[in-house]
Image (cartoon, rainbow, N blue to C red; front, top):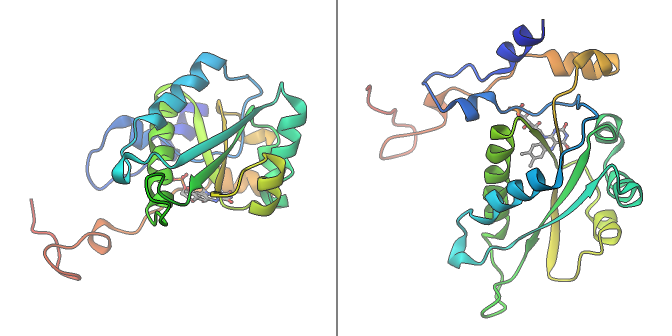
Length: 205
Ligand SMILES: Cc1cc2nc3c(=O)[nH]c(=O)nc-3n(C[C@H](O)[C@H](O)[C@H](O)COP(=O)(O)O)c2cc1C
């Protein structure tokens, strides 16, 4: 059953892609197994080597693990109820922030959010290689997160994420279980990428 389930959650791709990317998805059921500190460090090392506009590296992260109960509870409390219902079981919670101005001239860095997203993508791919899963979340209060994690001025709380090893869908309440088992979908490649100008299809291979 379990391998059937994982096979069904793999991306049903139009083209062959790297197995790490096929395997990644955003679960709600996490196992209670903790993530050791060395592994966590490797995730952030991967994020660290993401490219960024002017090499500004505008991403900053605040991490809380279940064993640091108070810090974990503070981050958990920033999530909307719908996310808290499943994320409370993840061994790791993460807050991703963007530095909103360039260090060298203080001007707005309009790519800071883009760069944070790319650092999260690096982290997520590394996590997948470590048999971990990352479920990112926009459903949280940035105001609460600023206070809970003491995010200073000049940095914006942008995203939260739950990280951990995969749990069993049966452990989720019914509605969440349905979402967990649901097939994954994407718009077709033909609606997503054009050749030369908008609306013109890619030439055939
Ligand atoms: C920036 C961002 C915000 C998201 N916010 C939430 C969220 O608040 N709650 C949630 O359950 N999933 C959230 N997701 C997960 C998406 O719903 C999920 O990535 C999408 O449905 C595709 O599914 P997959 O990641 O399993 O391929 C978010 C993902 C991203 C990248």
